Length: 239
Image 1 (spheres, helix red, strand yellow):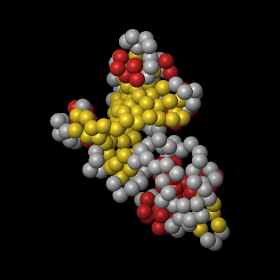
Image 2 (image 1 turned 135 degrees about the vertical axis):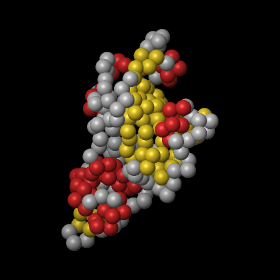
Image 3 (image 1 turned 45 degrees about the horizontal axis):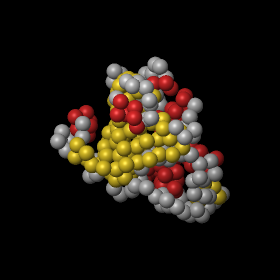
Image 4 (image 1 turned 30 degrees about the horizontal axis):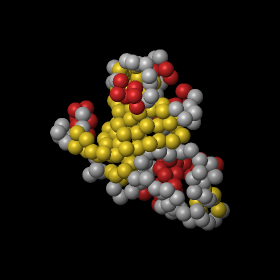
């Protein structure tokens, strides 16, 4: 088992860009609306103005924003592209929050129940199992366990993994997650989740079971996410 944290973190300006992307997609800013001035927005997000400007420049290059000389930065259109955290549906209770993750462990697992979810027919086939902590604005809010087939990588280390697994799939496994199916229930938490979230081991938390389909319409990922409802909520919005 590997048990050190992932090194391939998303740069801060990308994290902030993803946050703004999510805020625009959620309708917090409408097309044609002006964003707060850079100094004000940087203070609100807790970043340097220079970092914020790199984020805004990236979103402008993606066609989501436009800068008007002497007037400010405006939302050009609602996002239609593929954000890194497009399918991340947790947000702080007050709304929003920049997602990030720390990987706790990576190991090969044999779990025929998981194999069934992934539609792997071979009995006792191995899958990669990842345990991670999820944060919003650097606040720990959830723990997740993720599985995908060993066929994508016979050997793998935490140094190989990117903080965004969906980005890792696209760059290293030649597929991307094009759609997901979530089932939400409440369930007792495993001991590792209780320890990680500093909760009682007999506690019940909301749990998201997710299956992720690739662009080739294969189920490539199965995951379980337990989240703390005192800190965050699950949301889904359609426009």
